[in-house]
Length: 122
Image (cartoon, rainbow, N blue to C red; front, side, top):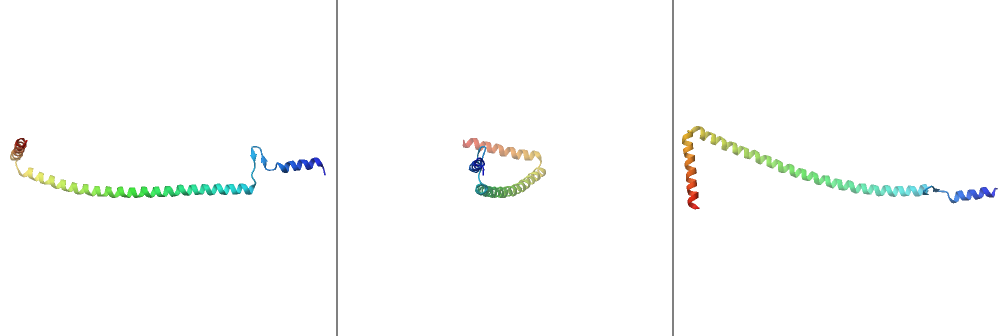
């Protein structure tokens, strides 16, 4: 055997795995690192998914609450509209059946009486 060749083979064996820029990991060690990194990444993603799930649940509850509130407000507005419509119909009926002069006299007398009472109690 050639001693020079043996020395060269020993040197190659000694520096096997070293690349330019650092040491190259063996494939089994690299696989373990990749698995560990993947597990940490999966745990991080799972935490994010759980957070987003809770957040979307909270948003859903808030939207449902606002929808119920808006429904109640809509029902109240409909009831108010009905009451106001009935009141306006009564006013129309009063103004149509009475003469405008008589109504003006009645309203003016109420205003005068109210102002007199207001100034006397001051």
